[in-house]
Length: 345
Image (cartoon, helix red, strand yellow):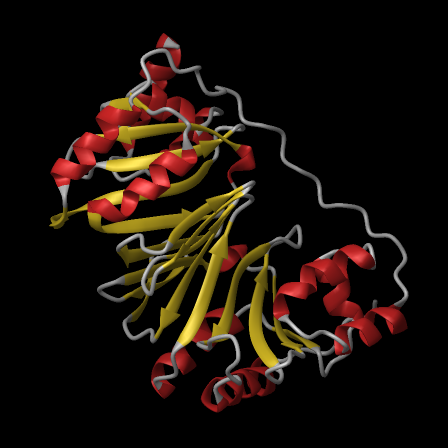
């Protein structure tokens, strides 16, 4: 442990702006281990009572919610509203902070102090699942400190110091492409797509390859930034989903201030919403069409090298409402300009 502390301090001296997640990777440890040791700021371990934590969050007022994966970071300001909990899930359905959380893998939580107080949740492998940051002048810090005191845990178990082995992409098994396409065309709700994959024992990448060009058209990886740029220019409100193994965070609304940055990140830098997308992490992009009771729903889906979802972009819509014509036009234009030939399955 003392060696880890020394190595971390040396690394920080070399790069003051290195984020904890990246520092953990360089040091061969977990982000949760760095947080638990107090290396990222004074940390108070919290009782892993997820319903108690999330039911209390609306009382904190305006905060910033952060969910990320390896290649995308989703940051949304707002208040946790319409919070509900149940077996295996936590839902936050406010107009600004919109979350689908699955805490079955969660194990550790900490409150960090300092200039940017935060509540940070980690899964059993020490990977960050979800974070909540106080916002100066907007968060009720009296309520924040009261919540931390209520959930403080004196004898918290230590998180893992060694990262879990990377999960290999699941092996593909033969799939009946005709049956898959038939069932795809019979979809009535976008949420049934995961069930479709499960029923056909297909992973997402495999299904996209087999569905047909009208349902899933491959795009150049550059389509990621191009889609955001075109949506901003057309002033079309969109939905951006970013998730990891146990959390999905959604932004609904326009995007306006777009900016690439050093290191290959493409950013949305709006006052209430930030997205940071590592373009090199997008191995594939697809224009995807799913039938629903409200008509076809179109998305641009970004996959990483292993076929995992980096981010998904839809037009802004509510259940029972048809897709925005403006978004459908944007997605069609992107497919025409950035479309690739359908790969051989």
